[in-house]
Structures are given as C-alpha cells and as structure tokens.
Image (cartoon, rainbow, N blue to C red; front, side):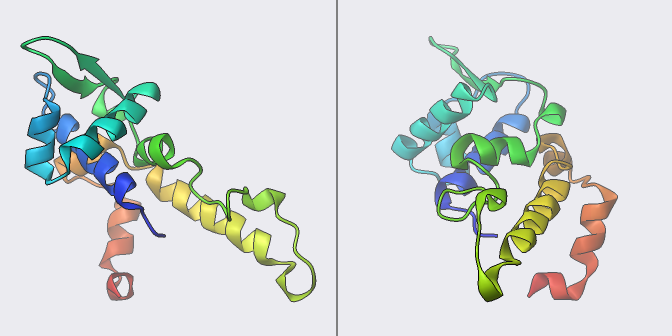
Length: 149
C-alpha cells in the first residue's frame, strides 16, 4: 500500500485532534506539531470537514476539533475523505476491471487486497492509535518480523 503525502498529513492531523479532545486546535498548531505545511494542511482539513470528520470554529478561541468521537472514526474514514477508494486501478474499482488472458484473475487479487486493507483500516480507530492500544489482530501482524521488511 502506498499512501500519498496528503493522506499521511490527513492521518497525522486527525490523530493530533484526537489527542487533544479538550478544545480546538489551530491549523498553525497542528502544522507545527506534525511538521505539515500550513497552506497544504488547510486544504486537507477542509476535505476532512466536508466528510464530517472535523469541525471548524471561528474566532479567537477557534480552531479544529473532531466531528465525532475519536473512537468512532477509523483510519479508513480519513483515507477515503482525502484519497477516495482504498483500492483502485487508474480510478477504477477492482470489480469494474475486465482483463483477458493471463491477467484475467487480477481483479480477484485486487478485491482480496481491498478486503485485507478494510479488515485493518476499518478496525483501527483514531482513539486506538492515540492510546497505543491497537486491536490484537493488528498487533499480531506487526509481531511477524517479515512485516517490517
């Protein structure tokens, strides 16, 4: 899986908000804490707001907060908000692909890949990551030395 930079930034910004549940956090604060360019971060936060994952409050005490509890926002929600479908090929969903000959079985592999991504990314919430208490299934996967190479 390859995460574009904007997706990485979106995940880190959402996690920063999840780690600060007691009040709004400004774009500048998120930018500084996570080393994300402020101008780029504003556009990402706007996409997260459009998806209902974050809220903006204006004024001197303004900033960004999560749109719902951190435990109710999974990593897949954030990725989809800024990057679209978890798995696609040149903008097409795997089930819409039709290959012939030796490549005919490739769509099934891509569908399986998407299912595996969902099993992890939909099972891990922002709260899980912030607390360091990942689901047992995810922890087991990271215990395999081959996972790190």
